[in-house]
Length: 78
Length: 155
Image (cartoon, one colour):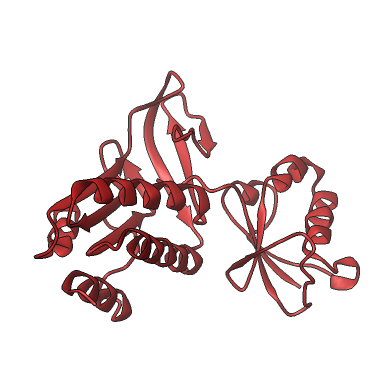
């Protein structure tokens, strides 16, 4: 499962990650898995949204092992 | 479809107008693009780099975006404003990379027959782009520290 992270999340993870999808079924599982991978990022991850193929999904969204998933920190454009 | 919209959408489609840019935004050029014979009120908002934040001196900003998704969302947001207010044109361009003080980070131009709708639509677009589009700001301070994010005072 390929995951890309942005902005301040790159202080905690590589920009692109490949995760074992065995225990990651839903979008919320992915946040949990990343929080376990780096507990220091847990509070940031709680405020992030998940996008699959450039569309935001909710925590109960069922992930596909071949999806390209993006972890989107809170926006701060403008 | 009206002239201004044809120009704007056509420019996006043929990629001569990028919605996320790395070079300085041509602010006056975007205003020029928004002119429309039916538009009596055009509002241009330029979000610029200020030299202070929370009593700290800011030296510069760096913006990052998930470019294809940000462009898609900016296009969706401007299209929603066009439909909601029946605008003659609506344009939003955001810059990424390193920006110095006083440079434009984002420009929104809205054109309607009357100013009230242009003001409202312009604020709608910038508020949604700031809060929803995958674009991030990092502030760099004179003391050598930096911070991801930033205050938003739009309530």
